[in-house]
Length: 466
Image (cartoon, rainbow, N blue to C red):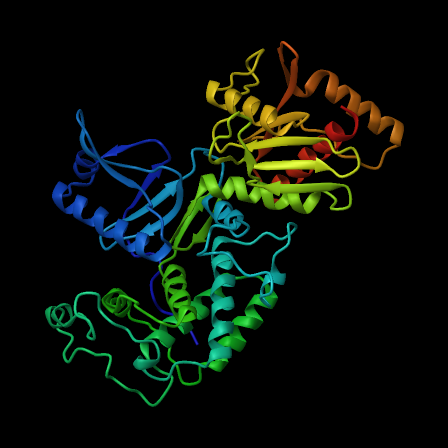
């Protein structure tokens, strides 16, 4: 079974970095496009991905000096349109989009990629594994397909009820007629085999996933899944995929809804250049702010021993006022030592590190300082730790290698004395240690997890000895 759908469609790719707005007029002039048509296309792409992933992929806004403009906020990924594609990139130039999508797998709020820990495909993931972006979203597809098999493969349109949002009970007939697709299908269409469009879409994505993955287990799972869809053909006509948007996917079977949208994301992939090679990236967007915070939270919980440390994320605490105020404060992470009962507050910020190597002293925003001091005073924590991402390996807390304990402890003391970014807030009757720590997002996933492991060692040191 082979797929002949061209992945390089010849459409131009518009690259947009976070917080770097691009005027639509300038974009139109560069490419000799009609400005109104570009704006219409952007709105169409926006609507498509908002409905698919439940997030706003970018912002279209008015600027008094440059007119209408498009701005990428915290979303990162690859979006496909009819006339051009969009790549929303991180503000960190060395951070690959494919790696961000892999990181998003660990983000609890990323419903488009999250796999239940009880799923049989969950075991594919390990911090030592390196998956390309297609493989990551492919695991979500395999997870949804496994549920489809448990509930039964659809054999007719009524099983998945493909209803247009324009005309209840029918598909978008006008659109089909305008494209010359007569007669148009309706929800009353019944086929006696599995070879209906929803299944074709899924099988086509599985076929592409088989070609892109180098993971032997994933290849086997894909082949086994394809074999279950007996008689279902791979879609080899790109126009047929474009017509898929007319179905609108109002589907009561959630696993089919997920599988079809994820299938389209895989099929609409584009090979994007990274370094000296290229990486296939699916058509998907993820929230970089949430991804960084929840990726770090996941591994901090995983790396700190449960026997000695209690890790709470978004822990709710009362405001320390009399009379009592309504509402709560929610630090990103609170780590408490079960023996000493000391705790530390962690605040995870996806922004450029405030501490620069070319400066003698760090520059932290006032809101960050005020927030952390308030959290510490409210919770009685012994210290606070601001965590930022960075693009290169910095001086991190040492991890013990094949060396004597004496040599390792010497390195630790040297780090704490000269390299730890430690500030102390001193006020009357109050002294709060505040640490700055940077997580390395460059390189492989293993490099980043190692950086988080160093952070956990520092947390252990602070709560045990500081």
